[in-house]
Structures are given as structure tokens and as C-alpha cells.
Length: 151
Image 1: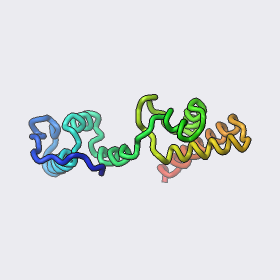
Image 2: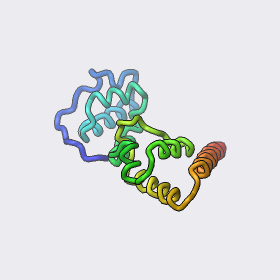
Image 3: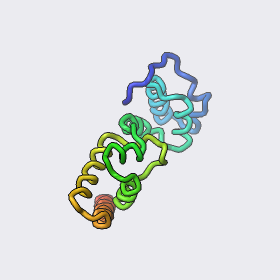
Image 4: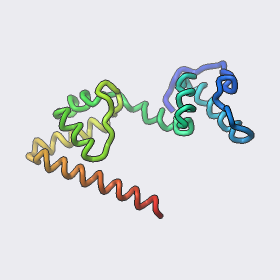
């Protein structure tokens, strides 16, 4: 969990409508999670959004993943020494998400992957061949996930 400012006073989550329709153990578990997240620094408005979007249970994971997200796609491309349009095309071909241009959604791992792509281009690998390899990787990954869900 990222280190956010600690809070002392917990809001009335029931009065905020964040446990509406829940009873017993489910209500208690929701209250416990809300309290933990709030005291860890998650703003009440973000908790409301997570409940409305039915993603409260995965919010702790989102927060851990988001703590590493510090670059925009243009910053990744610049740090990796490659063209931003090719980086976007490569991500899409591989089935990876592409965030909004001004969103800080990428990490040092993305920069390192970009550097590998830049090195491959510098070594003479053709762009279209790399995009095709990315498409094959994306399709193979999707097939693997589908197969694992059937088992």
C-alpha cells in the first residue's frame, strides 16, 4: 500500500451510503475495508467512486500499481529514446492499454521495455516486423488466458 497521509477520524460510512444494502458479515467486512483504506489516506471521494463503480475490493491493488505510475507515454518514449507514435502502436499491437496522453500511467519498467524496443530498431529490425511480433504476442497471451479460464 502506498504511503499516504494518515488520518485519525473516520467518517460515518453508513451515513455516506457506502454500505447500503449490505448486512451481517458483508457489511462488517466492507466497513473494515473502508476504514483501513481511509486511514491509509484514500480520500472519501475516491472511496465513493470505488463503491459506485463496484471496484472497492480491488482498490488496494489499484493503489499499489498506481504508486509506480509516474510517466506519461511521451515521457516513456523520450526516456527510452524512441518515437512516441511507434511506442503507442507497439503497445496496442501487443494488446496493452494506452493511457490518455497527459496521464501518468507508466513506470520505470515501461521505460526499460521501450529501451529494448529502441535497441531492436537501432539494430535494424523493421518496425512492421516488430509490430507483427507484438500482435502475435498479444494474441498468444489472450489465448493463454482464455485456455486457463476453461480449466
